[in-house]
Amino acid sequence: MALEDIRRLQTRLLREHLEFCGKQSPYYRSLPGDFDLSGFQIADLIKIPAADKTILSEKNDMFIAVPEAEIRDISFTSGTIGASCRIAYTESDLDRLAYNDATGFACSGIDRGDRVLLTCTLDRCFIAGLAYFMGARRLGATAIRNGINSLESHADIIMRLKPGAIVGVPSFLRYLGNFLRDNKIDSGCVKRLICIGEPLRDENMETSSLGEQLLQVWSARIFSTYASSEIVTSFTECSAQCGGHLPPDLAVLEILDESGNPLPPGDVGEVTVTPLQVTGMPLIRFRTGDISFMLDSPCRCGRFSPRIGPILGRKAQMLKIKGTTLFPGTFFTALNSSPEIAEYYLEASGDGFSDRIEIFVALKDPGTRLDQVAKRIQAKSRLSVPIREMPMEDVRKKVFSASRKPLRFFDLRAAPAKNIRSADACEFSS
Image (cartoon, rainbow, N blue to C red; front, side, top):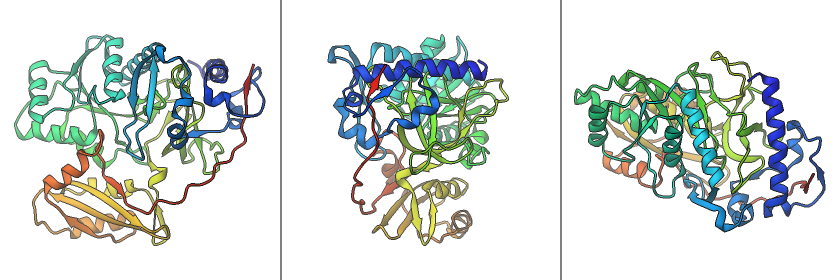
């Protein structure tokens, strides 16, 4: 669609969404003030207070906008940061979800009749695995639901069914690729890796060290995606691989600064999404807590839809160490580029004045000196931080057993006092 057509479509759908929220959502009905939607434009979103994970958790029931009998699925957020939160989906939300993921698969080049191996779970109240399964079916592709399984099981599936694409977490796909290579198992059938949960690009849109490792062990193209349970919308890279495309009929994207003001394309801030056409738990200006930037130039693939850059970090995980402000991803980049490291995680501690970081690593060859690893970390972060070698079993248990996603950052810092929230609010009226 041409850019002007996209804006007209989004404006119409946004007005419908706001009207629905104002009539059906107890939370949005409770906001005081008066607001006229008749001439509402996307730029007017700044007049509406944003919601975040804390508000969604504290007032969870108030965000449900339909009778209980209309809810068809209940999922929970991963709880990577804070407590997990219930998300409710109606029949139309699930249909929208299937369309969303079919669109994302098509964007990456998957087509009708292709076989897609899913290495993410459909159970444990997790929405992503269900979404990918529904999206593959909606597109006309064949889903292979092997889920969270052993390397041997996935290898058997690849040998027997020869999927053309795999959906999974990059760090797991790296292990799988190495396992296939070490066991001389041909993976040439796999042409695309749809990567979830971890970014493949850096702030300059260049392939990260983790992405490079995937390219080394797979003869496949790698596609980065971004999504969350709350926004029910995926941003998926296309053939140009220069940012995840926003499905313009499913969401409006903003990047906000610390004060909640929209930032221009290219500026780094908090990813804030208004998901459109959602009925079960509709949200307006949901602040995800993830840090990235927007790209609005026409894509080389021919699309005009806005794109999102890689997730550079989480707002809650920002570190301040000896006057230096950075995100854990800075250390991840250095560790991912270290051939000595087989697995790792970080622990942050501190008292609110200065943070401290300690890195725990499992080495490919136990006992290897860590001098070069320390130099890479210092070159990337400008900091000297302690590195401790740990047994592989202990590190993997820490990284993979606490959540549905691999957790490499553990925040042990003293919790700051909660800020008192205040915001201008409004009531929706047509």
